[in-house]
Length: 171
Ligand code: S3P
Image (cartoon, rainbow, N blue to C red; front, side, top):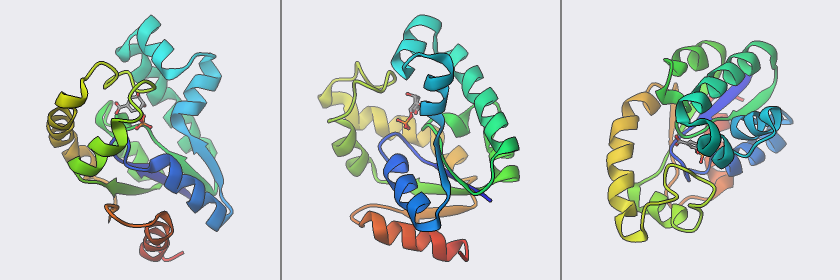
């Protein structure tokens, strides 16, 4: 089984996927890290040198390959993965998908400290960040809501969140 974690930047996909993979003894794959490794560039370098459209193609190809070949894996997706190429269709077809839901306030607080590695928000000022996230999340929520399971993550410990995921998946 593959469990895919979807959610906005800063929703805790990386952190939760690590704890979940330890708990279930599943392999852990981070889609962004896999794209970086295969292309020998960081995500900001790919955006900068090749552009976002090129990144989205790499993202789709890497996603297809992983979904077709892996077993017993936690797959941590990028915040934009569900939004392009109808990706949610293959995600739902080949894995159990989990949406990590977080409020605009939680996301803004977390992302204000970690903007540099994220090309889409690197140039947004702290003052404008909350508004940007609110709009962007509004556009993306329809895609995230296609996930099979949805978990509220605000003000909860990672362990608590992971327990809810395993309960909802009957694991
Ligand atoms: C993106 C999210 C990033 C990364 C890229 C684009 C997005 O992943 O894939 O910067 O479109 O939301 P994280 O969600 O891990 O930050």
